[in-house]
Amino acid sequence: MKAPDRPDALVVSASFLRAVFGGSAAAYSLQLGQACSSVVVVHLLLPSDSSVRLSSDRLCFTPENCHQPQLVRVEALENHAQWSVITHRLFSLDRNYDRVATPDVVVQTEATPLECPLLTFGGLMTKRKAAALGPTQSTRLDILAALPAAAEDASVDPFEGGAAAQTQDVSWCVSHLASGNHFSVAAVVQPKRVTLLSWGLNTNGELGNGTMTSSPTPQQVVTFPLQLQREPLSIAHVSCGKHHVAVITGQARLFTWGNNKYGQLGLGDFSSRTQPEEVHFALATLSSHRRALRVMHTVQRGGNNVTHVACGAAHTLFVTHQQQILGMGYNQAGQLGVGHRLQQRKGWRSCTPIAVESLRDQSILDLAAGQNHSACALSNGDVYAWGCGDDGRLGGGKLGEGVAAPTLITLLKEVSVRARAVRCGARHMAVISDSDLLYMWGANDFGQLGCRDQKPRSRPFLLTTPALLAEGVEDVALGEFHTTCVTSAGKAYTWGLNLRDNSALIGSHDTPQRIGLPDKERVRKISCGWTHTNIVTHISADEASASGQGTTFDRKMERERLLQRKAEVARWRAFVATGMHSSQTETRSSAGFRRRFADERVYRRD
Image (spheres, helix red, strand yellow):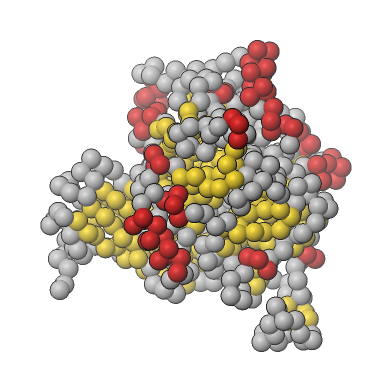
């Protein structure tokens, strides 16, 4: 039976998208054309050979939220050019929407140019070198030296070994990058393989190489446990906590390693690991028996299991294919979001994943974790935060009040700000809206909020730096006391504390400062550790690309985004003019510091 032709049933914001491997994800929104009388479920379908990944494979519209657009994030999984078509299928008891024909979205994936330099600023392992290089220079890591030699005979099984001649493949690019406390992890892609590298401090096994020996140069992570049925290793996501790491493979399996004092690895005990080990979460945590059977069926047929992961200082959160958030690790401030803080006699910790029930069946767009707080963004653009509320980091308008369950940040919703990305630093937070504007709040001891002072903010505020408004923020990364962002023009800006040159600038800056890079070099990916910053750059082959102008299609899309940003800025300024945005601040008194460090003393001991 042919589906009824109702092109206006589902409104798609874009019919064509371009996703670049190793770069920021593309996004588009879906919205119902008219009110619905019953729940409408939208299934997003991809070809079996597609090289893209979606933030969710289904969205749900209700009569209450039917007029709200819902965002879908699209990421390129493989480093080659390909065309994919996203098909939408509607199911509902409302006959106006059930099985009607809807528009498709065409996605073009682009390969990342190989040999992209990786720059690092600051950190304990590069302290002397960074100080000698000067205020705007950096250390360029020798990635090629750490990569394995490629066998000439592709038929040789790497598990069995072989006597084939070895050659060095000089082509590579960084697809994923994450940073912790004085260490970093990167997934490096070559034409025929993916290698997971790590470097920095290794006091808790966070480098994942089976030892506890630190290394200032990249080393290979033990990758055999990450490979499934002798399939080539592929990486979908990487996240670093203060002293631990979590990785999602291309088969949607979750692996963790490093410090496990609070059970943040989710392996059922509190022993640290020096190499990757898979997390097997109990199906009972997913509530109903029917839901558990669906998960079991998904796993058995090789479908997705874990789609996203975020590591905090001593806790870990991840999202399953069924859009369920689970968490493990330290929970004294309620940062796991389970509605309570666990029991003191158990050390306020859990070594097995626990479900966040209050967000069940919500479509999760993004997830973030900080020192002792967490946050997520839903597909409808709403942002929820939970955990410690000191410094106003939860964005609810109050200083010092924490919550143990996800709580909506109402201010963003009041101004119709729809988040497409959320990030957590140690004690501050950031949101990028769907029009590429940057909002920040929380601790501001060293100007890490970029608001021209050093007072904390308990409500989100818009960064109105002219360069960020004009170019739009593509991605942002938060450290302990500093922040770094990259714009759509490929320029990097940083602000906050410059301890050990971690922001590539001398001193503390409370407004965004551009990081100086060589001509024709654009920033593709950024990552902030506790006290250091990593940047992946791309050397453009032509002047137009280096200036961020791009193709005619890119210029057209940027003009549309600029109009969206102007409209959102106008809404924000009108809202501020009403006096309703009275962002509560607090002076840095000695009493405030005593309360703050008393709350976080456990992390400074680790």
